[in-house]
Image 1 (cartoon, rainbow, N blue to C red):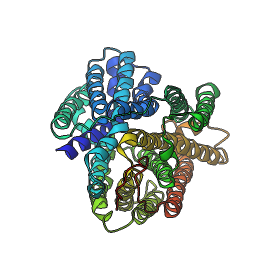
Image 2 (spheres, rainbow, N blue to C red; image 1 turned 45 degrees about the vertical axis):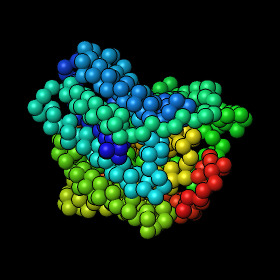
Image 3 (cartoon, rainbow, N blue to C red; image 1 turned 60 degrees about the vertical axis):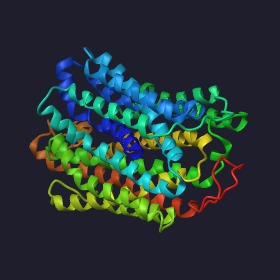
Image 4 (cartoon, rainbow, N blue to C red; image 1 turned 180 degrees about the vertical axis):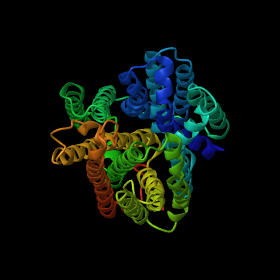
Length: 492
């Protein structure tokens, strides 16, 4: 019951990342929403998630992981109801930001509660299920959203969260034990929380905007540069603070920091790949969002099986072997997907989905296990927050950086073609949108998009290969819990 509760919490957060996409045209029509407001229905949620993860992790360590997780679920549920009842685009965007605030608590503390609940011998198996169900939520979003919209209005994509939240809260209250309160809780690093939140918000805002309005100085470069500078100030503050937001024992552990880096690289590859494969299917081939989402089942099913198996495999193989194998398989799957063209048989995409699903199903719980396996309870919230912040940043960077590189390559190819100087459709072509392109130019436009598509997925492959190298060199067995030097027993 405890594991089911934690899996459901991860599921509903990931579900809301993608379920809204299929409803955007309906929301635009029903609420008369401008394009900018419509984009922030998606981006407001991501921004709330990224900016407040450090605060929620720190509050969890101070006030109790279970209590802050429950509060986050309640906030997420209430804001889901607010989104369903929103009478205007501005109210809907505000509700989505509120969902992100509640979701930040869930992302930051689900793993901490799992660490509190399960001993090390059982933790790998539990993390495998948690990763599997969360991944299914991400892939199920377009499918569930498409099915709901075929029968009901757009508000149902938010109402569907409430029964999941109510069930999750009930299971946590019944099955997850209240962890013993720390006799001497760590003081809250207020300057660290402010710097981390502002820095993450600035970087995320800049990257989100860059994925829609490529690199306009005021909207992208300014918040991005300011965010990086604030994060640099945060790093300096952590070195000087007497009670830093990220405990020194966590920062000083090579395996944990490397796990965060591999998590960042893998989600950069994952989000960038799904973004471009979706453009290929929906814009170039004219697939519906539901059909595209259904095709993801070919990746979700092996992801679920592999992630569940990863827990059992962790008892026989080292985390290094599991993660390097997962990253390698993920790179091979994306390599297969990078060969797609409008004329390619779908069987090629199916193989790419299958192999990539197996790879990500192995690497996500493998990374999570090596990061959290030896984390002591007093710092589990901070460690979980850092790990999930790396994932959120990887997702934002994947959408923005991979999208920008792919678009730049496509535009360069188009401008170098005979039609590049006579037709100004490079922007839409970069997204695979051929509406308005004269018939005699379409073959050249498709070729330009394919070149950008392969370049973008090449970045994703390189990211996973970097993850292979990093995990092979950094993941080694540990014998003592991070942040618990006074614990005498050895974790085998």
